[in-house]
Image 1: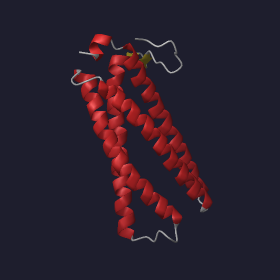
Image 2 (image 1 turned 120 degrees about the vertical axis):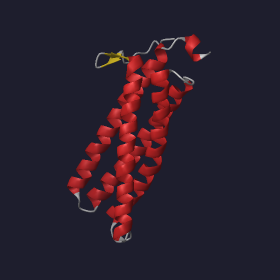
Image 3 (image 1 turned 60 degrees about the vertical axis):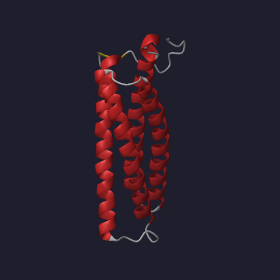
Image 4 (image 1 turned 180 degrees about the vertical axis):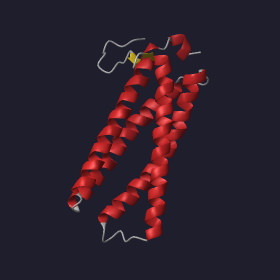
Length: 167
């Protein structure tokens, strides 16, 4: 069940077979989602305690929007990644989890790219060039990591035997 196109196929991750790379991707995704969740919750609590005005400061508004968005998506990301880790470690459940994780994270990468881009533009427009630069670099790093993770999961899906997929 291998495809003829090999532009985004990965054979191993740092010498580790794809079977174990799924576990590594699951663990890393859970850690990233947990960090994002705690950071966004901390940002929401910090902004709420300061009672900042959003109309006069667009940076506060975009920070609150980004934190609210990140809280919900990172919670979802953690749940899907736990299911991926469970499948990767114990092969329990359906391989459909691989497709679900892949499609979910492709969509999340696009949504996060829009959010990072919006925050970059607002920060730059309001006279915060360094904050804008850090947001842009962080967004590029986030997108790059998850695009690589998606390539790993897609490569693993392409080498699964058909009898494993349809049991």
